[in-house]
Image 1 (cartoon, rainbow, N blue to C red):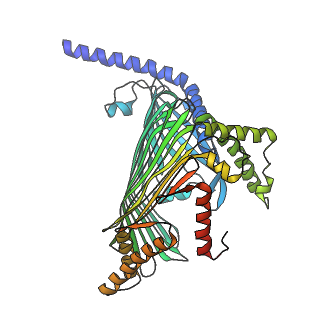
Image 2: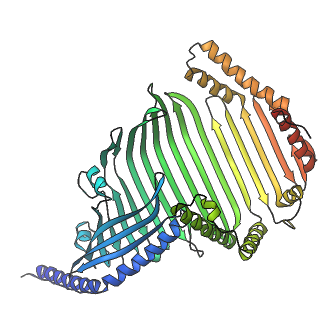
Length: 504
């Protein structure tokens, strides 16, 4: 035997010995590791589902251990889960084929050479509840995945929903391309990253109101990058993208197509103050292949006191749980079964609200816009709140102290209104170009005339503009400065007159 062959043989022997010792160690530690992981998962499920009213619990049913592999069976119980218009309890079974570390064979084959404690290969098992799901997946497990658990308790894995093609009833069909979600998490899920993708989902059905209906979603992308805060919830960014949504309905088919939908949200904390942003974007909307426009919307919140919010949310969850129990028990008036707040709880709520307002929170609609071929309309709103001297003040005085500043702006584009009115005329069957143009022009001019007649807005060129600024008890409304009491009277007068009611 030459020297190289001897070294290779020695390496194989050493690796084999290390693997055997590691596999033996993993096998002996496995049950404790699984129980700890299940306990952590149950706590996270409890937190995640608390506001939704449902509950979930995972339990280890059995564990069959060997030297290099083990087989575990789990039971997932979902209680009070909303299914359609009903709440149901559902039980799911999973089987887990576990390869012991440090070098599981499936990872070696994939050239993943970093030692891990175990590699889990799990899938859903068939039972009475999941049997139709298995049939839709042509007999294979409709849900499966892999997870590698590192010695530092980190997790790296995926979950996969397999393709489905089935007919739930005589008038409905579902075609699903499948979805894969890749996940990674550090010890105790302090950091979580996720990336997922679905190619296509098509649902065809018959609606009593609309007749045949078909919904098709294409190109779904999911991404999250999160870090657990000191307060127990996650901060970071989430992204949802959908390349195209197509809805076809009616016996004479009408087609609405939405392309380039995007939702982004983020949360960050500085000390006890929480800030967040939520933004939506739609690249294009078409109706029967006719372009309608594009849209954007973004919200922000700043200086939200986290302990105060958590305390209010916790109390809300207690009330919600009581309501749901009454609903589950079949109470005729479930809301009446919810106990009123005790004096101590009422005091707590008032203290939490004061604490929240003392942080001077700000809520803003940064942008809400809609753009057509010839114009764009926009709206924005910013509200700064502060803690009033007392909550027992008269409503007007309370509002003056509660809102430290308010800025609002609405800009309506007359060309945009004209574009939409012209499209509406075409949808209603109008084919004469001159008639369409006339109807569109009348709609935009009418909007400008109404704005001027109500004095709620001004017309500047092709824009209908309304602005409002409030601070220190004074209002600036479209350039007119007045005390807030006079502004309230003005608004009541205008809207009271428009509705035919009595004017003050």
